[in-house]
Length: 227
Length: 219
Image (cartoon, rainbow over all chains, first blue to last red):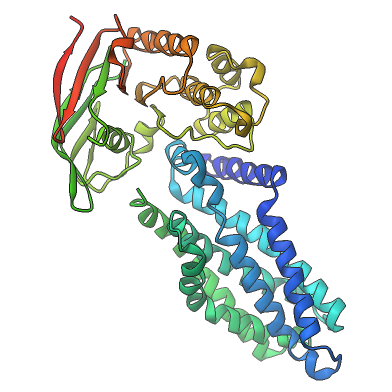
């Protein structure tokens, strides 16, 4: 195993261990995702076909807010006692450090996406026709958002207004991903995916192929002058 | 044995305030370089620049044959030989001292036994499995010092290494620094108590108006 992969494994294991000891981020995401779906279920308290047509949008709104909550705090633990600087000194490349954070954020985001879909099925009676394609859509959407989010979370980690700034900067960038996600999910929780749905899925894949390596590449330049 | 560290024309500003003004100097191996000066004169900034925690605005930093210029980061070949003890301990509160040291050990690719040895050297063996969040300031400083000892670095950059330590802890730090100096390592420490480090082949440098001035020492 190359040194970078070894370092990546060590950093991911460290983050998961700390999260298990003090599950602040995962509990907050879990509670928030549940609340969003439950609140929407009360807001649209009538189970008919019209409400079911809103569910793809609801899934993505819940995911966007939940992932914002988790991803914006992904560097929080590194701010205490200068751990971020300690890790930068102890790792060969800052890119490995960023990658570990983005992967951990995506991991929790994907867990929450499973929960959100489950809750939407339970509360809105939605039926998933092609679970594998739905899983692919969620993986592409959540991973893309979490990588972009982790980049800005790292940059804004020391700012007092980061809760406000984070969505303001991140949301406009992920609009294509969310639109494509909603379009694909509409077909997957509906009649089934067709050529149009695959085109949206390809757009998500293209977005990730550009932004995932892009965020990893630019992170060292952005973190350099955090001070 | 490492060569020294040479600084040439280091300049650093915060906003409109210039902290370091074309600072130059040479830190030799086998000598304890103590940097003194009043609060806010730039001692910590200098150490942060030298340890790569702040990027260099102007000037050069030379570690042996490797030269770092303005805008560049310290290369890994230098960082892995650098032991840094700052005001922050770099330790996670949720993990125990042993787990924290083990994390850094793995990242630096060091042998497993180094963790236990380092914890014993700072007399933290019995509390090593408690979370760092439960430690007193002195215990946390010991754990942070153990992290540096474990690395066995060629270059030591220490910001008030005796801060928060009791008498026994201070003596321990002095003994360890003495051992590093004897082994010909480059040791640089900011302190408000230069008199504490007697007989360690000291050079005392005062940071005044953004430049270093030698004000005494041994020999």
